[in-house]
Length: 323
Image (cartoon, rainbow, N blue to C red; front, side, top):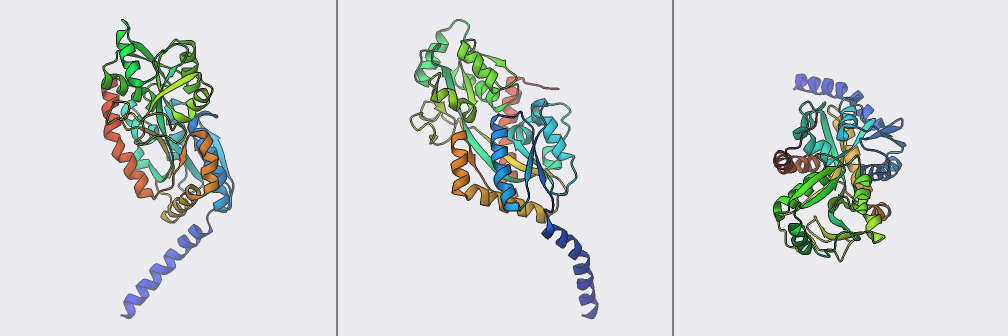
């Protein structure tokens, strides 16, 4: 009995410094690496989260944009950072569930090198057409109109292998439309092309499309979520528009490097749940088209794993590759 007590006391003494360090965290500002350019949907969500997360942790959270490679450069920077809780990532679904099927030599392994602390935001995608160049007002009308065109239609995206690209591929395959994919350097370039009439469709992230939808330059035909979006209450879901089992959302998570102390991961997850539940935060997110989320690390990891087979199948079917 005495030996057992001595062993327990020794173990507690060894654990005490680690526990004290975790309880003291954070003692200096954190950085949040956003792997996409300023002004985009991920950047907007990341900056809102940084502001509110920092207030709950008692330290500022500084956003750093590390762009390139479809999110791989910034995500790799998070994966290879010191696992001390001071480097976070605003990681989109591409970084966690898609890019491993696009890149032959991805510079990080999502399941091995990253810990998803919490789901952080989510928004539906929306099927949009240019008002001045496409006469269709419903998805069924668009499909019929597209099938009558000898050369089919061209659909734009923010880049090869993005959720926008793969969702456009899915729509064409499900409806029998002959669609040519035209990738651009970003969502704004894809929308500009459509407004010129060079492309006739995009299945875009709602936050990116909202301003043009509100201005009347684009027409929304359907949203890809299970329920209608509060931002577009008159726009049907894909199921309501006649394309069942088409559930796709653009989402992201806060991530940290593998090896980050469990106590730090748990505190970050707790803070993210507090952020998502705050009515003021929800109000700030509302104009962006995104909804704030807060989950456990286990729930975030399960979401990423659950979607990987769907994205892998779409990547394979589209033939998309990036090196």
